[in-house]
Image (tube, rainbow, N blue to C red):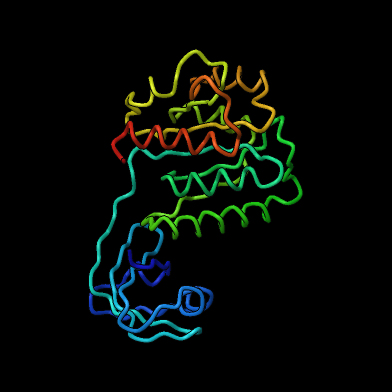
Length: 244
């Protein structure tokens, strides 16, 4: 499979145009991935543009690609949104990376009551880190759309979201299985998966979400880590909605 790179220039490029990769993307292409002249590559802007091309010049500071083909990939409907509770160590980052590779369309960091990690004074740094992880994971997975990482949400924000989206809260004690409800129509609304922190979602949070119209579901008979639950749920949804 051809190597894939992301550049804003891909948004308007057409067959016959020359797209220039510069900065870190050029360094990555030439020095890390070692692209060579006449090598076939793909380019995207992370917003649906998908280009095929041939490398015509390669150096650590600039890689030139002549575009040979273009496709515009529509955004997925419904969108799969992962609400990932902040977790200690790198567990939330692992969750974000895996979900991106598996096809999530947007990610929302959640400051849950039981989240050990707190972003109160470092939200900008945390968001920048997650966005970098998502961008690199999307490139690795050759995705035409890079998932949006939204601002940090509180439980009240999720309650409000339940009024306009189909919210599914992953809760091991729930009676309904995700596999049983995954194929239910969302009427074009976002399908929002809520994953709690290591200690689980607090009872008052579960009640608030359920009262707002969210549905509590479980993945199976075992309890998954916060780093793997979202990825497993995205896989179930992808199969149920025909993406896989």
